Each structure stands twice: as structure tokens, then as C-alpha cells.
Image (cartoon, rainbow, N blue to C red; front, top):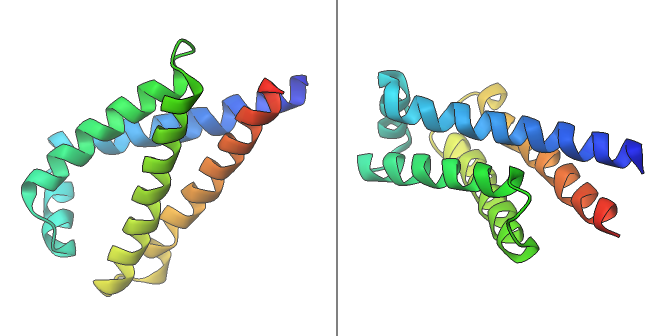
Length: 120
């Protein structure tokens, strides 16, 4: 049981930190703004996505949030990672850039699976 909790918190911590870091970049880094333009997204989408990443990260780490709401956050992050992979491939980015969302998708899946293991 202790190993399951360590795996859960490590993977959840990685996802949470990455989401908060990327959201901060969306709001402050001109290169991130340019990346959204490169991918063909409107500027308001960058702001919406940044806000939702912060909310989703908080939902995953706050213990008082219900499992149903946490499941929505997991789904939203999974959708974000899959969409990011598709956007990078469609815009002709190198595979080394496009593959990173899939790596985070795997980490997210491990977090999700172990969240259920520690609840059981």
C-alpha cells in the first residue's frame, strides 16, 4: 500500500507541477504565445487553457475534491495531451517535440490507475 501511495503522489506531483509550470508560461512567456500562433490557435485559447490547467492541477492535489470531479480533471488533461500531440504533428513539429505530450499522458494514466488502487 505504501508503494502505491508513493507512485500515486510522485506521478500526480509531476503532472501537477508540469501543468502549473505550463500555465504560468502561457501567461508570462512570449515564446509560449508564439507557439500557440504557430499551432494555429487563437490567443484566447491560450488563456482559457492556462486557467483550466491551474484549476485541474488544484483539483488533482486537493483531498477534499470528490472523485467525480477528479475524474473530469484527468479526462481534461488526457484530452489536452492527445490534442497537443495531434497539433504538433499537424503543424510539422519534430517528433521529439510531438512525443512529449504522450509521455505525460502515460504519467497521467499511471496517476489515475494508482489513485484507484489506493482508494480500494
